[in-house]
Length: 464
Image (cartoon, rainbow, N blue to C red; front, side):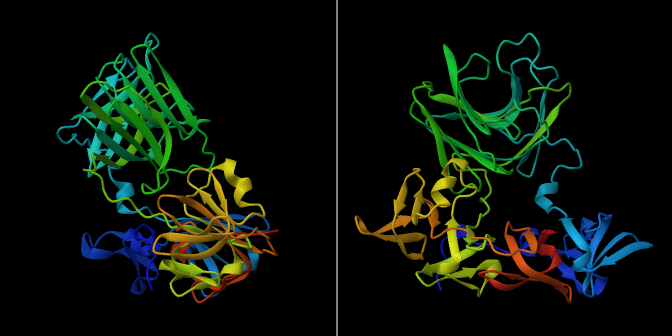
């Protein structure tokens, strides 16, 4: 059976992070590949709150038909599912997320350079290791009349493109941002086109343009934005266009800045601005690519299949028709009948302003342009959706380039006893659940019985 499109490949949590269970070591997780035999990850840390309000924190594991939590070797408790109110599990981060945590300074590779653009309270700096940039910046000095940020840059000529992924920013001021920039010089007065991500600001993505006679800004509210998040700037002639994406594959255009970049030579790179604080704040940026070179392949973000009962599956979709959808990856071998599906979100989270279009009675496609094309769903295969309508007949649309969401019906939630969130992004509303032989077994409307190992679970909540 043909797989939908390459970027939807989805693996289990253990495959993504390079860990596998070592059954011979009392439920420990040990690193694959033999790079360091001494590196062992024990059962994950977690917090359990019982229905009576007691709170336990420690290592979480399954024990017979219960969930065991250990504070240390001498103090542990086993709880039946009926006793549990909520469980939150923090799995150890993969190798990539731990890069640079040792605090060792890493020199920038040539031809990258860095400097403060504008006067700041403290000199900024950058650490680089294995493609991860850790940019340290401070707020601008009190007498600085220009916006000031720390710039990490390299020279280019002519048309160019830069994209990068903002992983984190540890300053919560709403004026603080991390992002990318194209400029025609490295002084505060030069022309600049800067796309910044404000994790705590009202306008989460903000595109600023400065010239020699002033500037302008265009922001975008993304209330459900979660880091990491991707940004891209493209220069063509004198124009610079800004894009943003949750996965580095499906891009939304924010704004075109016309006629700003008039010099053949330009500088592209990373920019971090800090709004308020009396110390250096850190932004982590990776997957940096200039003119298509230097960046690692973007990870796939699977579609979200929303069931009529309200459950949400992060799932590879092999193909679909009027009768059923065939799933792959984590859900390999599963078939979900089409009447049980409310919608397929190919670009998610969807903007809040389109909620009414996908949650109403109309069936059809929410297009990347913002338009809604009404019609009856016919088929989905090889990255294309075919929709039939009385006015337009049968038409084909590209998921990658044209479609944000396929709407098939409304969500009608039923009786729900448990809410299960997985590491891969699924949220399942279970009618019943139990612990059986080291697994969580749940019954979900429209999906049937599903089983999860501890390595897949992010949280479990008993619904009132």
